[in-house]
Image (cartoon, rainbow over all chains, first blue to last red; front, side, top):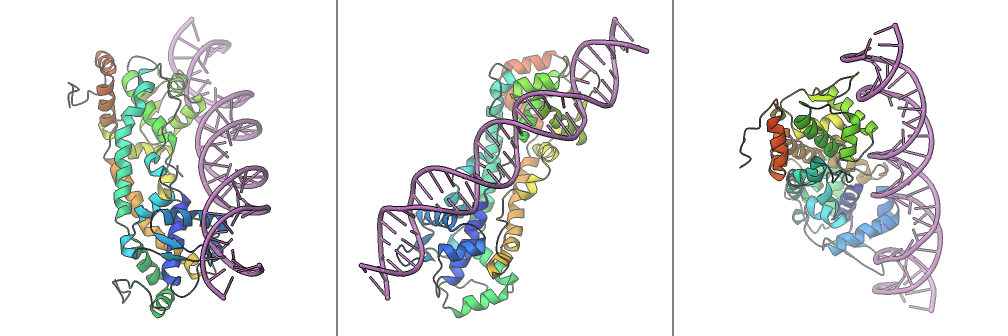
Length: 165
Length: 165
DNA sequence: TCTGGATGTATCGTCAATACTTACATCTTA
DNA sequence: TAAGATGTAAGTATTGACGATACATCCAGA
């Protein structure tokens, strides 16, 4: 199973919340039109991210805000929040192996550890990528967003204020 | 997209070929009944593994044999052989992000490098796992297979002949 | 040379996962 | 109280992977 599209959508959403939430209301509708999905999907991601303590979502007037600093939010945090199950089954194992064959009976155990190691490699790498790093990449690609961000009393300035690094 | 079940099936097939092919014909039918899939699927895997130079498949009388030593076949080799595309798109990115939004326009580029790094982490880990290591795990779990293997003039003895390690 | 048994491959049907859509209850500010 | 937003539950549609069938192709052995 491919790692879900949810993760990318969640990053997209979090980037927008980080930059925009301090001076404009960020709602499921506005996010959905940028992400290109249904508002309901955004709301489901809201729920998952809120449960993980990554964002706050206002119920009545609407609008989401970041609850932690971008440097303290890793891609792993995001991924686990929106799709907790699938990292444990990153690589599929065929499910109908014969129990009457010595190979079929053991294949699952043979692969269990190696596959778990691969999963851990993904986890480690994801844990090393922070939302702040992604934000800086975005600023580099689109400096006007950084200007916007700078002018709008951002809660968290990225460390590399010059965009140079 | 999850990493395909094909990879696990291919490992299953290769283990059986490694142990059995020296003294009995290993056909798509016999493999399919152990793997629990359709013979056609096995033949497709045959084609992919053959193309990658990992096995030889006899056309007329049937039967597959290993073409390289188990220690020289990595999980990455197997994976790339049977599913070359999906490692490059391990993590899905939402495809309908708005081009009219500065965030939507750049999200794909923001994520490209980090995602590629994750893919490389998977590749590195897979490259470090050899068919020989998997074979030894199988022997440890099912010593009778090792006895079988030992008696049947195996082409390649695993280094840890005692199964102890 | 012919034939049995196996592979190579195209095509179609089925199934599960995923997302979209609609709908409505719930909540909070104005 | 009303407006606008979230929370959540169905039902529907779409996509991709796999299974099933069919048949052409190929090679050893009789």
